Image (cartoon, rainbow, N blue to C red; front, side, top):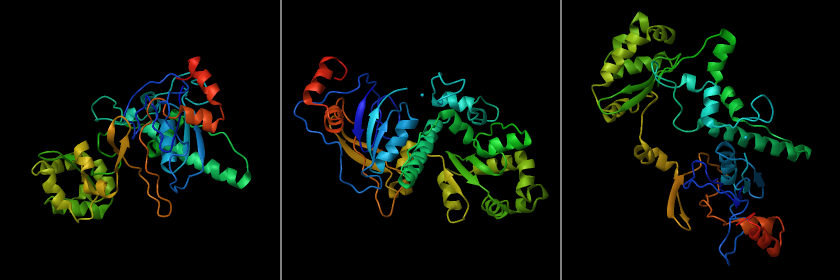
Length: 355
């Protein structure tokens, strides 16, 4: 187990959007260099949750991701690692991991190419969604406590999050007994709405209504298609998706992604490329949104991490601190927050409970 306090949590042995180091720490505390002085409140920023202290007993990704967001908003996070499928039920003793919940909860069944094997999503979306559910639930419970003076226990687990996140796919099955299948980048009930291969990459295009389809057909040089009885509305386009998509795919192959981007610019049509990481973090909108943040790490030097997704007009998100080094906050938590004497902390170290 590990004690750690920081405004922007990064848990060890876990991949989060701010995790740079994967390390498995076994002890409750981790040692600090002699003579270092640590402060439990790492900044005086005026984030919306400044003054709120969170005890985090979670591990892996969902819980740490939740408290990372709370830390971004100014809360002080005390991290104590310990294992979790739900608090009750037949699977209560099973270990819960994102890919297991994604398979058990139906996500992998609907993810991947139509004729291929089930695929996992590129990042641990079930973990991340659980963290977001927990984040919202914690804030709701906090507001409830402010109103009533009563706290409450919140249960969040990967499987429930995944099942709840099936949304329209779940509704189709529960109300019409329609099982889902894999469509790759395409959409089950909207056509066209997918990635098309260009001469050097991919372009994603979506026609959310008839007007959109008319514009797309014009931009592709096949305006007559919008008057074809087979494609007059979305329902007909879904029924006749194969010939329509084959025709569109052949046309998209004739130009580069950049050329198609220029053609679609200003058209009002939802479109965009499939970027690699370099293209993602050099995208002008990503840069404008401040999604790359730099910070100084005591041993690694300058590190860069993705910034928080949400901005506030009246209370700025707190600039994140770097991942703590081994033992950086042990004294802070045990002495400053919990009131242990220096002698007691030393005894814990001598007994091997903390380093």
